[in-house]
Image 1: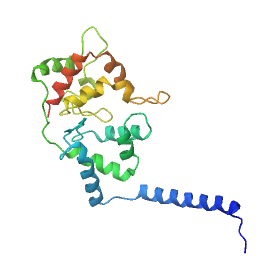
Image 2: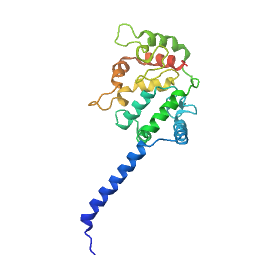
Image 3: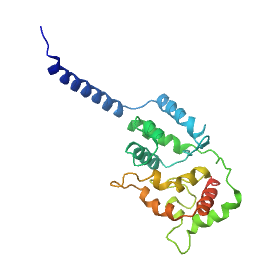
Length: 215
């Protein structure tokens, strides 16, 4: 019996892709075990610290402990959709199923280690004033108006309390290069864009120093 491979091969390829897509969908909707969640949590901690309190290596890695679940979920989606630039986190985020994502964000929110500290203490008073009052004569509002009086965050607005000061400084300084990269589909990062743009380097350093001291 003779087979025309040119005719059969496309159908075989389509069938393989259909089965692969079905398997991926089943996997994405499947519940995850405590063991799987713990394994993934330990994987995350290799960069974010043993208690997800952040880590200083070649670059400062952000604290995830105590973070708002909705904020983490939004940021992981931003990595996947290339609205936030980070090739490492794209690779991490795009393989997470909805069930794993929900479990991880819950686990991170329950962690409460002490802040790593290390910020210049003499900047904290100035940072506290900016955080609570904003900057007079500018369009920079109090940070507390979105992030809360204790910087615990709320929903889509992230917790800042205890965040590494050098991480916050890098993010605010490079905001336009990392966030809101899909101009056709703006996200919540657009709220911070003009504020990050207008903050002066010494103001950024002061705010970063202050929030890093908060539990």
